[in-house]
Length: 95
Image 1 (cartoon, rainbow, N blue to C red):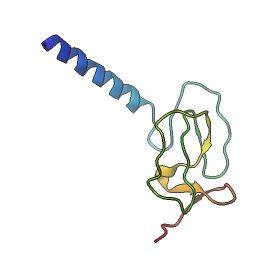
Image 2 (cartoon, rainbow, N blue to C red):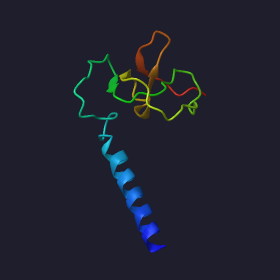
Image 3 (cartoon, rainbow, N blue to C red):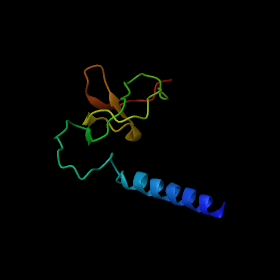
């Protein structure tokens, strides 16, 4: 019983370390893969991309937690979203 708990805790710690090392402190995922692209204004290169929000969209839009192909994205955690022209802009909070 103790051995199973120890193995479980070891696995949890290893997974936590892998996930924590995946992000730097001010943008998106980092990778040892040097195949990066130069992105547009306010965009960041994401190795593991995800859904992007649009200005005026629901703030808690559902997005599956799966990696999509690498691409330039707006850093939503900094308040940037896509406008109607596809630019990455800081959207004002709409009430």
